[in-house]
Length: 265
Image (cartoon, rainbow, N blue to C red; front, side):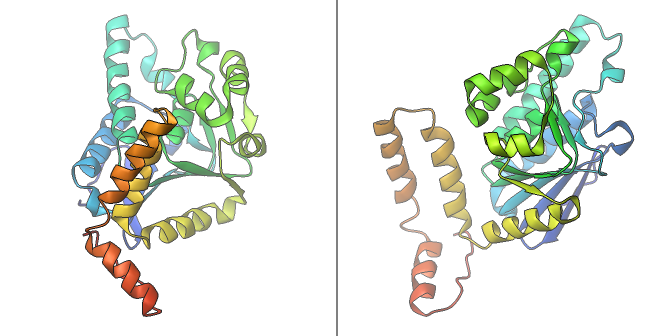
């Protein structure tokens, strides 16, 4: 997949097999507008079509103030009901494309993640956050509600009762609270956030890519099943790895006391 130029995103590959996707509207706190939704659809549809292009993705925001401040309310001011709903279909497609991405994804949260920004972060497999980051699902203060997975992903991350408090009050929580509750995996000093996220991305990218993709799928799909069915799904995912070249390479490298060279085959 080529590093296409987008209006609202910056793409780069700072390390082998890793794609960094930067939300890039810093002048408006990287707010989510229609074009950003379309750009994210294009990126993740491309990755879903060719998952071998990268082995890990890091999603972050431009600047230090915000990862994403949520929906662009200036663009939404004066929208007709029909136009609002048409825009939301774009956001729905964006979330589906991100959820369906088989490549491991890390959110590196450089600033506030409010509303749709928090929902984008929750599309990732896990998140690291800078110490000053705050999270909020503030839609209720605007007369709407989360519509990009917020009422579903947040309870799964932090539990139903805590999620209801966040969703019903619209009040922000700190990075420290988010870590204690399970919304983020690690709180980092702002100056080390990207380095720590990249170190983890490199660790993931060094592993067998077919294995990491099968693990991600097994966790996602199995989590929606009863335990017995989920374990059967896991076995099916496991068996797909047995005839791969990477499985043979991993075992050979272990016995030869060297680092494996995985090819994704």
